[in-house]
Amino acid sequence: MKTTKRKSKSAQKSSARAAEPAVSAATGRVLTLSSHCTIKDAAALKQELCAIANEPCEVTLDVGSIERIDTPSMQLLCAFARDRAQRNQKVAWKGESQSWQEAVRLLGTSALLGLSANEGAQR
Image 1 (cartoon, rainbow, N blue to C red):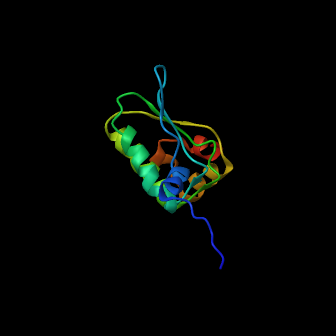
Image 2 (cartoon, rainbow, N blue to C red):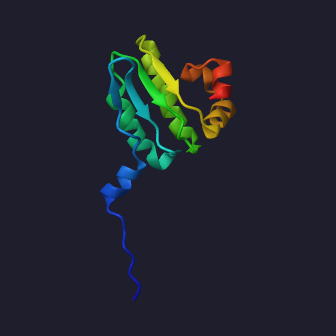
Image 3 (cartoon, rainbow, N blue to C red):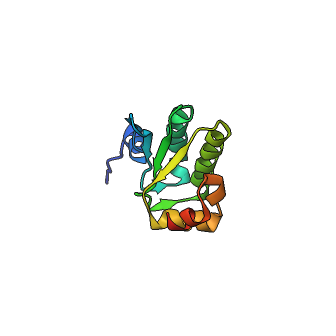
């Protein structure tokens, strides 16, 4: 009889989460997104974004490590950016990733994310 060892649910969840937001007095909150931002990880991403959504200081999202991002995750990021823009709160974008650049271009989300057309193509 063959047995396999399964990861515990908490171990599976922790691998899907984005990094904990770091706080810097100069720049506010920084949230580093995980390498895989997919529908499987969307609930964890939503929790992370909700935790920092009401921060009065600028929030920086680091997209530099993204290797894969799908439409549901991009929708969460667009909603987050839109929500903060409606409250005159800034979202800054940090890092560059080929996957991020392609997703922004293919989905046409530059304006929704608050990126200029050139910025979205270069990110």
